[in-house]
Image 1 (cartoon, helix red, strand yellow):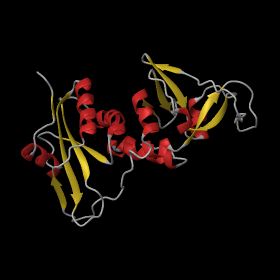
Image 2 (cartoon, helix red, strand yellow):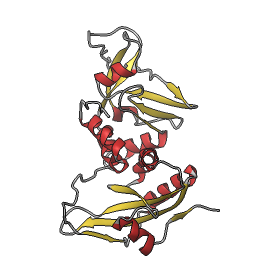
Image 3 (cartoon, rainbow, N blue to C red):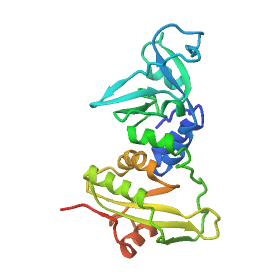
Length: 255
């Protein structure tokens, strides 16, 4: 498989999140502080296609429809803009994404790089979460080295907002049997322990696709980094076994 070449940190983080859903918080953190390109009809100011915005000028946001939902399309680089916009004469403006989401409408989502090689669609709740909590997704990329001892346990203080968001997302999906939580840390490391969410899925559901959709949905409620793991009889990892044997699920599907 050939992967596209990322042009900046945001695109690198997006590619990483597509491979590992637990890395979406880092992508959100970078996206919240990024400058994006927004398609605009009309004349260009230079050969690159960029149009300058005069102070006080109103900006009409373009809209796209997908599966009954309305999205504002934005692009993270000229390369993704060229791939995603069929009209070669279309201009674009550059704006910090924070200026867009200060008063984001409840009925609009955000389509990042639609039609490009690396893209993701965010619902309105997730977009508004970026603006309210620009640092919610700060996550350590350090992983325990070979032979490290991993400590597993519970927490004296439950992250109730995050667990509530996870439970609601599990309930609305319909294919989640149960959800568990634990804290994980590498012995001797200085990093804050990371919360791990274990998901028990119905047979036939692709875990990679599930986590790619699930991660962005629950990340705005997280207070730090988190990981997602599959919990079932085929997963013999220490984390999955600990959850099944030592903890009770905080979400169980009715019926």
